[in-house]
Amino acid sequence: MDYRTALITGASSGMGRSVARSLARGGTEVVLCARRVPELEALAAEIRSAGGRARVVEMDVADTERTVASIRAVDAEIGGLDLVMANAGIGRAIDAKRLRWERISQLCLINFNGAIATLCAVLPEMVKRRRGHLVGVSSVGALAPFPGVGAYGASKAGLSMFLASIRLDLRGTGVAVTCIHPGFVRTEMTAHLKKPMPLALESDEAADLILAKLGSHPAEINFPVSMTAVARAVAALPAPLRDAALLRFPTPDEDVDDGA
Ligand SMILES: NC(=O)c1ccc[n+]([C@@H]2O[C@H](COP(=O)([O-])OP(=O)(O)OC[C@H]3O[C@@H](n4cnc5c(N)ncnc54)[C@H](OP(=O)(O)O)[C@@H]3O)[C@@H](O)[C@H]2O)c1
Image 1 (tube, rainbow, N blue to C red):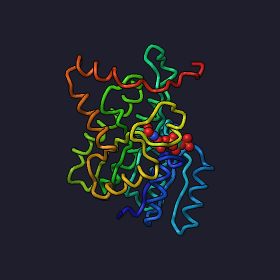
Image 2: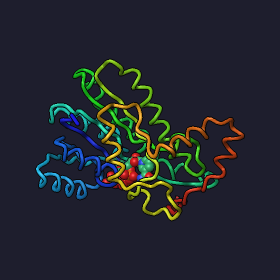
Image 3: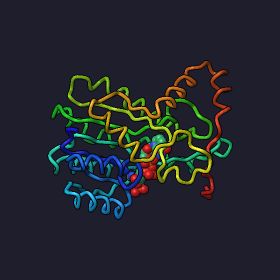
Image 4: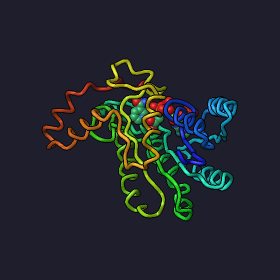
């Protein structure tokens, strides 16, 4: 993998941590970003003790101005980021009958605004350098209107659309764009789910799938392919058939015990 440097948001756990660890093992200097600094420091120490290079940046992507400023600063210090991966995200399932703005505002801010801010932070610098790869971690939930996850699905669909569109603008600039649509992955985000997670992967397995393909700069990385294909096929049905199909999907466990 020819990334000299890479910045990954949400590197304190799950897929972000797995991807960062693997990149560092392959010789990439990784910039680990998230809110939980002790977890980032522990990963950085592990990477350094294995002979790799890692920096830690405390970052709350919901604070988009500081996120952009931090990424620009690290880009200048490190001599140019080759890969920026907007991976930070939170999940939340709420039946729309219990939907309140207070319950989803952080999700919208983190998953959409935070991801877009991350991806835009050094985009012009990458274009000037004619080198860079912008990657966003979306979800299979972006591909069809599954019940119970309207805000999550919308935040991820917005991210997917953003990436698909800027990929066209950036053709010929040397800046690549990739959108990742994972199905279920066993991470902190899904640890509380009691219902079965079909075809679920471990986060290291997901990272291996991502890194096996990332170097070829694909428009999308979808896994499991059967799940993303079914989601797309269902979404393409006429609305009455689509609704009937999606209402047969199990609704996810709800997270509404937040006092909002
Ligand atoms: N697990 C799945 O089944 C699945 C499926 C499809 C897509 N995804 C997506 O994959 C991405 C990674 O999630 P994961 O499954 O690996 O879950 P995870 O282990 O919970 O990791 C989420 C990461 O995002 C970070 N994060 C959350 N809010 C943040 C904020 N405001 N600012 C900065 N960092 C923040 C967390 O770090 P801190 O708490 O330390 O800030 C953590 O490192 C997410 O975008 C998620 O939506 C997951």
